[in-house]
Length: 254
Length: 254
DNA sequence: TATTATTGTATCGAATTGATACAATGATGG
DNA sequence: CCATCATTGTATCAATTCGATACAATAATA
Image 1 (cartoon, rainbow over the protein chains, first blue to last red):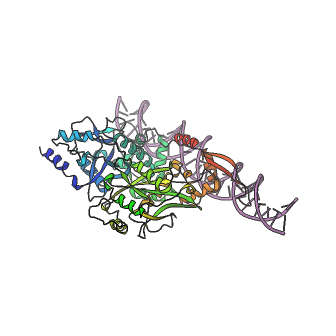
Image 2 (tube, rainbow over the protein chains, first blue to last red; image 1 turned 90 degrees about the vertical axis):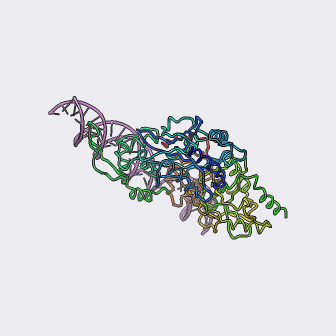
Image 3 (cartoon, each protein chain N blue to C red; image 1 turned 120 degrees about the vertical axis):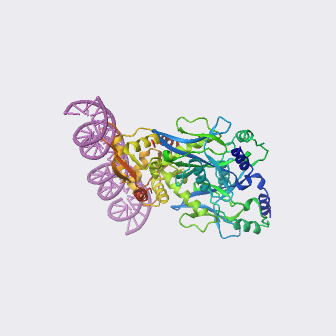
């Protein structure tokens, strides 16, 4: 198969890669009032894993992360940020890599570049769920979005990586006003509140949330959104990046 | 010289190291109302650099960072946290490494492990200035503490690394109550305020600072400190780790 | 046209914060 | 030994923010 030949070519291309360092991306999306992350299913194993990749010898690690995001979701110019580097000696179970190689017709030679200890740099991305078009990579044969509270078992230390990504997202939500990256261009206040509630994992008081968000003066109020149901129609809002920038700069953090 | 032989031995021990990945530590201390960082002077260059090191093949990166801290300051069990990983392709000027090798009697062979692109994981540490006993490493012949506003030119991207460390320290100062790690065991409120002002880079209103800190209920008030000057004697305080832990856990961040 | 669910905003008291004031108190010096 | 001085600890008050609740406005529906 062509795909298998691609895999074999890649497995033999270790000399083009920066050694023993990988990228893993925790890609967050928001759908049906659920915060989801994108997982790939490893070929011929029951494990799911975070979309990841390796770094070319002459590639910035940030660029490698952008490549992972682009190849797995088709998206570019997305909010993407490094959050932590994972370097425990035992974080990768090499048997999983061996299994994948075997099942794809490659004999795992001792000393092969993929059968080493790997340190991985974690990035998290916030994408508009409706715009992402996921594609599996050479190591995987399926993908899906999973609610962060209902994830299948993950390979390696990927549960740990996901947890830390979520902690960082929660911490940075207000600090960097990044939640809007998870919504379509226009949205209602109720949708925004639901997003915040889902990320923070707790209920917020509607009136106070609305007051607070509006007081930031980072939203542009558009027309009303009609035919939503038997009730008053909500306004649509658009996130105003310029106003947000002014707000973040004026914020006296210290 | 013995020291030089140590250097040569180390230069030839690349096969014991995790490849192309290093650790750099931004070690903060507080003295004379100045926030300082510890810098080493590279042998035979005019550049200063952050204390750093490499990672053994079978060593967690956190442990490698602890080793750097211990070897350079003699200190253990110090507040030490990873903050960012720097992976620009051009971040290391290999000529500096070549120079150091040459000046120490080692011919820099092409392909030598030290003459590669390196990615570095940044850690920052907060130490009690009076307890640290700095020691230069094999690459350096001197060290000193430098006010963060009066640093000499640094090698590689170490200015960038220092800046990011300071940003993280500022951001985490209240969030994790870490400032106390920079003070001796007992201190006055004025000393604590001066520390905060120095880290945050701005003046604070004394009465409000005192009210705020005391309201956290994380300090133990001890006896008064006598003979400070022609004025009322201030109380000494001790940071109560247990109370602080309770406070941080009770803090509803989200 | 009455009903219903949701939206946008107002309101009120509690809690927090910024700014200022002031009494208490150790040393110093005449 | 007492007036002076600088600093400390705390109080106070207005301004601001925040939690909680209330309520009028309004699209769709029956």
